[in-house]
Length: 595
Ligand SMILES: Nc1ncnc2c1ncn2[C@@H]1O[C@H](COP(=O)(O)OP(=O)(O)OP(=O)(O)O)[C@@H](O)[C@H]1O
Image 1 (cartoon, rainbow, N blue to C red):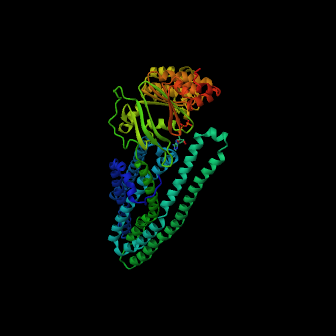
Image 2 (image 1 turned 120 degrees about the vertical axis):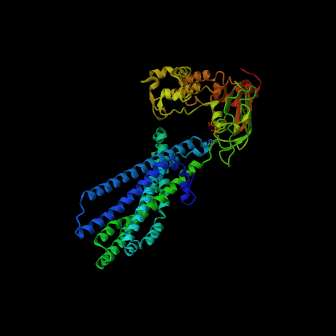
Image 3 (image 1 turned 90 degrees about the vertical axis):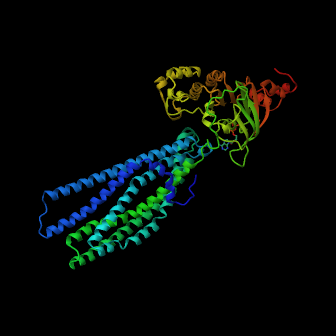
C-alpha cells in the first residue's frame, strides 16, 4: 500500500463523490465568501468616501450614513459566520463519509491485505482523513475567499488609479513562482512524517495487544527500538518541513514589504501630483492587505495542498484495494436445500500464502452432511490454513473448494459464511457486555435465546456470578474472564448463530484439564446435528469422529476411522501412542492386535 504515484489534483478524485453530497453547504459557504469579500472592499470604499468628504468640509454623519455602516457591519458579520459555519459543516460531514467508506471497505478487504496493516489503516482513518478535511474545510474556502477578495480589490483599486494598482501587484508573479518552487518538498516531508506515525501506531497496537507477553518476555526494549524508528522518522520529516517553513515565512515578510513600500512612495507622489485623493490613498493602503494576504497564504496553501494530495492518494489506495467478494458471484445467497451433495469438498487444492512456498499440495477430501471429520498432523502441516480457505479468507491457487456442491467462487461470501460457525484457540471477545458478545451470533436475539445458548455452552452459571450478570461489561479482549470462560462465551455465540457447519480449530488446546472438560462438554452439545470439521492436537477428543484425516507437510497422508488408522500402523498410530504414552503398544498394533 505504499504511495508511488506523483502527487497531483487527480488524487482528490477519490474524495469528489463524497464532497458532491454536500454541494448545498459548499454553495452557501462560497456565496457567503463572496458577500464577505464584497463587504471588505466596500469598507475600503467607505474609508475613501468618508475621508475625502470630510476633508472637503462635508458633514456626512447623518442617519443614512450610520444606517449604511451598520448594514455593512451586519452583512460582514453574517457573511463570515455563514461562510465559516457551512464550510465547517461541509468538512466534518465529508470526513465522516470518507471514514465510513474506508471502514466499510475494511469489512470487505481480503485477510491478506489486512494482515499486519493495522497501523497503516488506523493512520489513514485518522491522520490522513484529518489532513484532507482541513484542506477541504479551511484551506480551499480560504483560497477561494482570498482570490475573490483579491480580484474585487484589484478591480476597485484599478478604478481609483490603475498605475498604482499595477505597482501593487507587480511583484506577485515572481513571488508565487518562488513559493511554489520552494514549497514543493513539503509534500514528501508530510508523507515521511505520516509513515513514521504509522509505524508508531503499529508498535503501540502490538504493545497493548500483547501486553502480558511483552512484560513476561521483557520485550519493552525491542518494541521501544521499533517505536523509536517511527518516532525518529516522524521527527526528521517534521523538522525538515519546519525548516522549510522557517525560511519561507521570513521570506514572505520581506516580500510583503515590496508592494507596501512601493505603493506608499508612489502613492504619496501621485497624491502630491494631484492624481490621487488622500481618501483614495488611505483606501489603497487599507486594501493593500487584501492584495498582499493571498501571497502569505500561497506558501502554506501549497504546502497544505501537497500534504492533502498525499493523504487523498493514500485514502484512495485503501479504497481501491480489491475486495474479497471480487471474483465471486453473488447468486448463492440462500441456505442450500439440495440433499445428497457433500457439505464441504476439496478437489486437488494447492495453496500458498506467497509464491515461494506451497502450504497445501493437492489436498482432496469430502465431508458429508452431519458427519464429523477431524484433522490431525504435525505443527505447520496446513490444518488451520485449510479452515481459513473454507471460510473464504484466502483463495486457492488451483483446485476447487465446494460448499454444498457449489464452487466457493460462485458463492456470495457473506452467504457462505452464514453457513459456518468457527471456534478457534483464540477466543476473541469484543468490547461490550456478556450479552452483547453472545448476541453477535444472532443480531436482535431475545434475552431468552441468549440465556438458552449460554446454558447449552456451560456458561450460564459463571455469568450469573459476574457482578452484573449478562450486563457485565467485558473489557477489550475480555480481560475479566478466564480462558475457559471466554471460550464458552464464543461457543454460546456460535450456538446462537445456529449455522449448519461447525469449524473447530483446537478450541481446548489452551485450557487446563478442568476448563477443558467444561468446554468439551459444551462442544459436544454444539456439535449435535451439525456437520463438523475439527482440528485437534489431543487425539483423545477425536476418537469418535466419523473420519480422521492425517496431514503432513501440506499433504493428506492417511484417512479413516480411529480404528482403521491404528490398524494401519502409520503416522496416526505413532502420534497416538506418543500422546498416550503407550510407545510399546506400537509394536502390538503392528502385529495386528487391537486393545
Ligand atoms: N498468514 C500467513 N502468512 C504466511 N504464512 C502463514 C500464514 N499463516 C500460516 N502460515 C504458514 O503456513 C504453514 C501452515 O500453517 P497452519 O497454521 O495452517 O498449520 P497447522 O497445521 O494448523 O499448525 P498448528 O498445528 O501448529 O496450528 C506454517 O508454516 C505457517 O508458518
